[in-house]
Image (cartoon, rainbow, N blue to C red):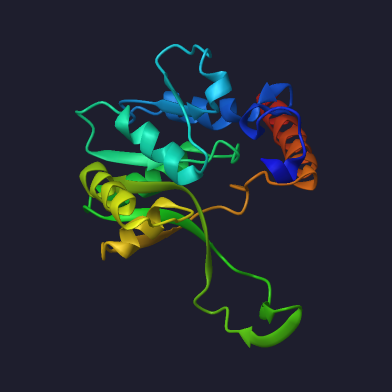
Length: 215
C-alpha cells in the first residue's frame, strides 16, 4: 500500500467509515457456498478478532501472504478464492460466475478487457504499439483447486519463482486457467485518486439503494 501514502495498512484505510477489507469480507461471509474465510493481515494487526474468520499474519509480498493464508484453510476445502482486500466492490454475482467454472473443474480468474492503447516503452522511448485485441487485465477473486495451488507454492519455494498473482503460479506449472469476464467496478484501490473515486462510487451506490427502498 505504499503508493496510497496512507498511515494505516491499505486494507485498513477507511472508505465510507469502514476499513476497506470489510466490504469484500462481508460478501464472502454471506455467501452460502463459502465454507471457510481466512483474512491475511500485516503482522502488526494479528490481534484483530472477527467471528468466523481466521486471522493470519502475512509476509513481505503478496505471494508469501497468500501462501500463509493457504496453510490456514480447512482441510475439507477443495477450492480457494483468493481476493484483494483492496477491491471493495466485489459482488455475490462475480463469485457465482467463478463458482460456475469450478463446477466444470476449471481454475479461473476474473478479467476485464484492456481499453487503452498499449505502448511498449523502454528507457522512456516508445518501441511499438501492442495489439490489445487479446489483452485482458487480471482481477480477483482468482479461483484455484487447493491441491494444485499448494503444489505450485511448494514448487515456487524450491525454484525461487516470484509472481504477482496465483494464476501466474499455475501458468508456470502448465495448469490451464480460464478467463471469466469481471466488472469494471471491481476496481483495485492503489492511489489516493482511486480511493477518492471509490468514495464517489460508494455514495452513488448508497443513493440509488435508498431511492429503490422508497418504492
